[in-house]
Length: 331
Image (cartoon, rainbow, N blue to C red; front, side, top):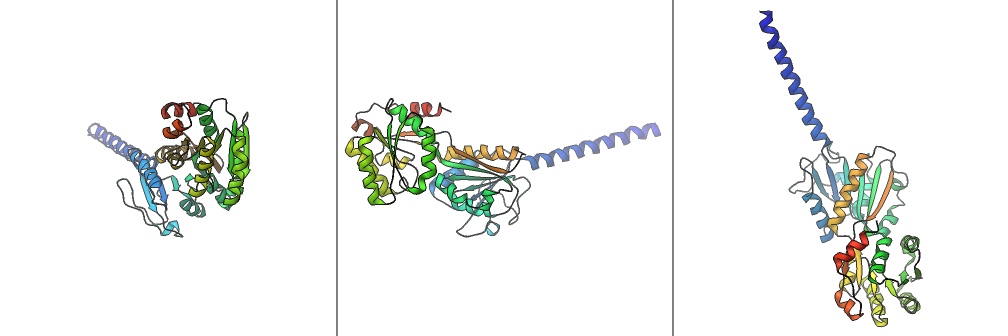
């Protein structure tokens, strides 16, 4: 009898152990899925494209929760948005399988850094000047979590590589900047080894015209920074007109500037930025070291060229694909 019962009991114990192990593996698998909570306060096309790319590239078994914020609304009061891959959560509580929070745009970033928490945080789609304005927050000066900052513009080294690819051996580069642009100017100066960099500061529209009159005769090309001038249509057009009048190419960091008459720009698309932001979040989640802030410029860059402007300037410019390869090859 005991000989008959013993194998049966052993088989039952084995079955229970196997079932328990399978259950544990299922729980571990769900908890370790790369969950992502996305905070969004801007519904414009670039931000929508960024979020859509995150959804389309979400790994199987992972979860993406989209929370839309309104101006001045605390994150805890925001309701999760619906969507194919969005999941609901208790208000103000982070799900166990969503270890990374991603704030898209400066408004969402401000809300995110004011919310206490230990989860890794990615601040994406920020300009350099957006980031500089956020640096005064105690949460960024003395972070109690890992924070990654993804700038939406490529590094100044990429912009210089583009100008060099389009105009080899031309080294006189004119830049008009504002006082708020100092961090961008420092980055440009650091990257412009071997260039004859001419920088003039213009605090207002009248000063912009004066700065351009000084710069144009001393430059082979003009560069529009992604600052108060690059983001202002009237100021940007003033630089473009000055360049066109003198037969100088104008480079920049936006598609809009190229469409408006600039020669070329190194940009990163929202879809590219979404891929880089996801990778940055994974890097933070895998890092168990000390807390701090990691800042990344946008990579890879995609080159845009205005072929009509190129013909008007008598320049033979390589195709956008070739220029993109040459710009990204410097990394």
